[in-house]
Image (cartoon, rainbow, N blue to C red):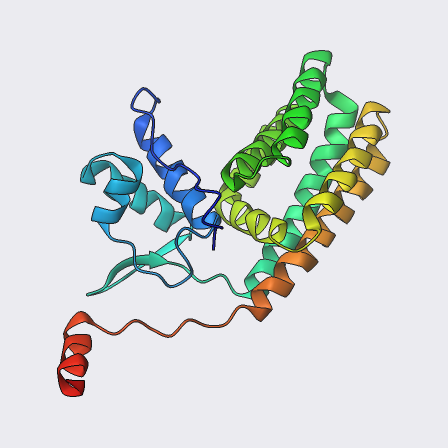
Length: 247
């Protein structure tokens, strides 16, 4: 769960365009950062209050998140946060290591000066974000860094494939960063990767990227294995009957 002092703001700017995409992103971040936990039921009212938008936009966002596998809709219960098992996480990380390793290799070979400058600026923002107490700022900065990396590969298919996994990658990225000491190690790994990219050493950059993902996988999966399974919530009627019986 998010530390109370952090208080990330998931409200959506009304000027953002397209608005539906911004609402979906806000709920996606809220799930990734533990605002809603695995198995927790998502109510339209709470999501409307959190994002500051209409039920129609929230419903559209929920349909998109269901297609991404981040939520599941149970008959007679409604949408809830999907559970990602350690085995599923391992599968995502295996694919992510290959894709991000390839992204680094291609970036080293093909990125132009503007794309390299954009990646450096994103990396500077990422380093600054790690000094921030807001986990949302850190996660946004990390995602932006990888967006810039993929933009410099010149490979649209690679970017499209990573976007298909984006929701689960982001969830796992937030999980790994919660591991004690992982943030500092992560930045050191990325710094080494940046040096290889600057040297245009694609082979080394790929190996460092894969090493970074493997370490992130270890941190996240250890947390997933140790997370206790929450007790299923009782239906409201059953809870009222139980309370009446105890009275």
